[in-house]
Image (cartoon, rainbow, N blue to C red; front, side):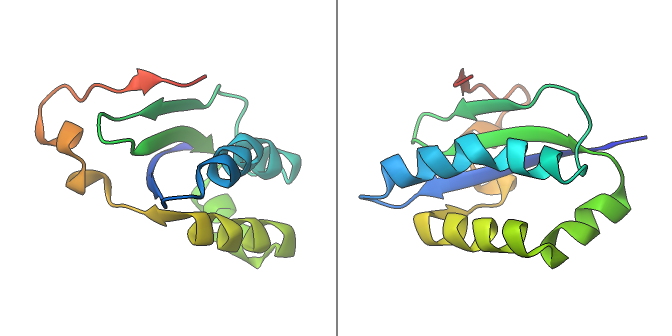
Length: 105
C-alpha cells in the first residue's frame, strides 16, 4: 500500500521561474527512481501563492530512501533554495474543513 503525501511550498520572491521548473521536474524525478506509484500527482496554488503537491510513495521505505539518492538530494537542495517547505497546518486554507486550492496541472 502506498503512502500519500501532501507537500506545501512558499516560493521565495524572485525565484518563481526556478521554483516552477523544479516543481515540474520533481515528481518525474522521483518516478524515474521507482519511488512513486503511478497515481497522478496533483499540484495546486493557495490564495497567498503557496503551492501544494500531492503524490504517492510506493512505500514508507521508498520515502526514507529518497534522500540517499544523490540526484534527488541535489534537487531537494535546489528546491529549498527557491522555496520554503511549509507545514500544511500553517496554510490559511488548512484552517477550514474543506481546503480549497486552484489546480495547476
